[in-house]
Length: 97
Image (cartoon, rainbow, N blue to C red):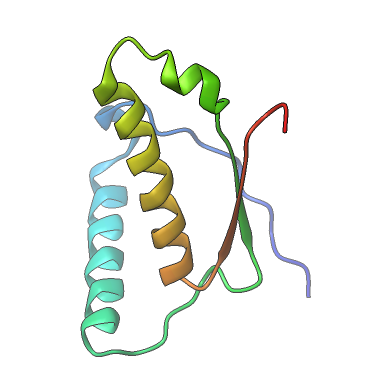
């Protein structure tokens, strides 16, 4: 059976979603969190891989703000952990390597 294609929508501002869409989003979030608290397996990203491309370590050392470099590493780590907790895998690459 073929899945219906949906139009890609980008979320950039609060006004991009309607009230009904926010209600659905929060209801779905509560449902997922409840499954997690009951230790039920919920892996919607099973057999999926998140690919991340980060800048080179040389450039990271040259950051003007140490906080900017740290937040980039923290963001990458959070994405990896989140993807794994939902059953997916992740690959991290640095250009030029």
